[in-house]
Length: 371
Image 1 (cartoon, rainbow, N blue to C red):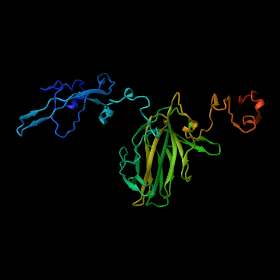
Image 2 (tube, rainbow, N blue to C red):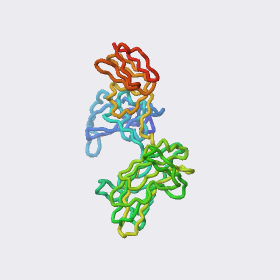
Image 3 (cartoon, one colour):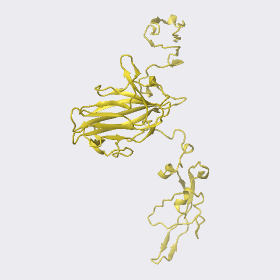
Image 4 (cartoon, helix red, strand yellow):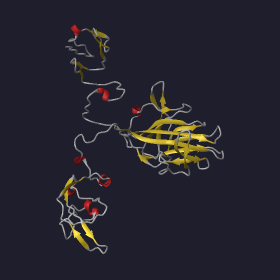
């Protein structure tokens, strides 16, 4: 029979030469036979399950290999070659054409964004320029990058921030073996121009400050600190960024905007002269905002409870309650609820009884038609 490796490139590879059958033959003593076979349609890029037929017969051999006895061939046995091996997946042998409707079901579907930098959880510092080493942090329960004071700095691999993109940056750190005046800075690599923004909690918005390349400047203390802030492309709007988040408000945290460059990298450093002091960088992450979301023209769910979320403010053309057939035409912000005796709207703080249910109120319109 044909070499199984040929099946991926030669659709006729099963037609090996042999004295007893068109498809060739093979001796098998274990009672099991595994063979990789060509799939139907693989030559045109739409491989599909392919049927084959096998025949078998018993053969008795001498030690010398001479045949003592051959039985007759059995009746054909049908088999189905299915493109389901790991190599088929890697080689793109399985595509949409091979997935039947409703064939893929999951208990939970997680759509995750891709981290642009190595976060050390895999136990390596690949992509980071530093003399630091990966150590297990007992407080965090995961691998972290420990940067000794005599080197004191680390830079990640470069990643792109597209002009209109906003990236969410998460990082944590702690100082070990240091003095009280030792400090940490975390930001972006030098040699580029950045604009910096500070969040004004009272005004509930970002305000530009003097140019800087640091998210935080000189944070000290032995406790672990964790921050979430943002990197903006040169055309992105700072008003589109939510407030920063932090575990301790000991020092302000800033958002940074690229001015001319598109590629940048994270940078962290420890300022300390204490022998044995080190900076532990905890799980740095860079995600482009919007990645990980599911965008669809139409999502059908049997019940709204199938979606677990805080819906917040929902804009809708109309909603309908199926059992009582109550259409609600929503033109602006409107909240409706039912009681045993009346329909109530909070849009204009007006109660509509059943007799008033056909009356339209603007600008908040509620059309009620109970049956």
